[in-house]
Amino acid sequence: MKTYFRVTTTPGHEKRVAEDLEDYLFRWDSEININDPHIGGVLIGYSKLPKDVLRGILTNVCIRHLHSIVIFDIFEKIHTFIQLYDILYKLLEEVVNKRQKMCILVKFRGVDASTRKKMLLLIKFLTNSFSFATLCTKKYVENINTILIEIIREYVGIKC
Image (cartoon, rainbow, N blue to C red; front, side, top):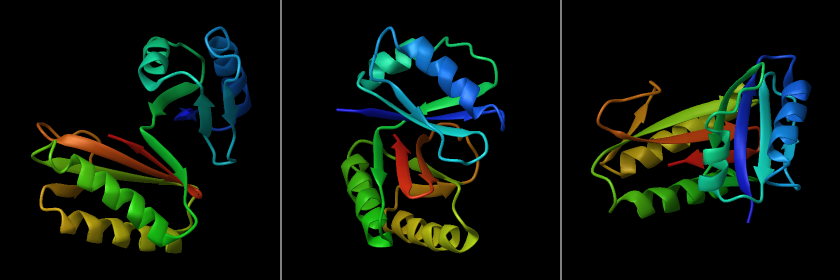
């Protein structure tokens, strides 16, 4: 099973950060792979390491021009809006019994304005279907659990 993650960098330094991060992680995972989706300042990677192990290794990583790393709980290629709806609906159904209230934070990377608008309408419709879910615009909301949904071109990454 692969663990997917997103890296943000200083735009223009993606290649160097990808190489440095692959070199750093190689001692734990010889199959580490970090790709440039050609979105300024964004890299997508995957590892054979479990999420918790990878998170622990990356906690104190210090690489020049590396800004942030998000390890996804779910990462899938989406071909249609219906597929995106199904993925998000299943996720919200799973967490409905676990949490009282939650914030859903959505980020788009490398998605055109028309597609972004349609996806956001779909996500708003879905969150309105679940009374405990609120679509949020701020990164951190006090006392509310947050689900991060990142749409990166034709992929959706979700961090619960």
